[in-house]
Image (tube, rainbow, N blue to C red):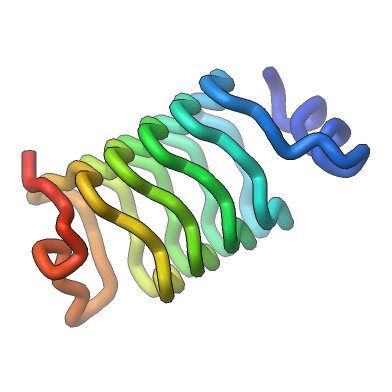
Length: 122
């Protein structure tokens, strides 16, 4: 699936894209609240400043994804792969990060504590 197809289907009311292959897509500033990308491959994707509040990204592969300044409020990130992801200044209010994986190269906002969010260091 490419970016244009995703945006077109989303604009038509479709929000369910489980296990979609969106590796390395550029969705900078995209407006996709409530989208369901459960188990999707978003490795290396650029989602900087994307509006994704209320989305389901559970078990998604977000390895090395750029989520800088993204609005992830209320997003389900259960067991998501966040190894090497950039989450600088991302809004994570009410986000569920239980079981999400991170490593030394994952970048969080200053003062963010992944352990208190039940994340797993891998």
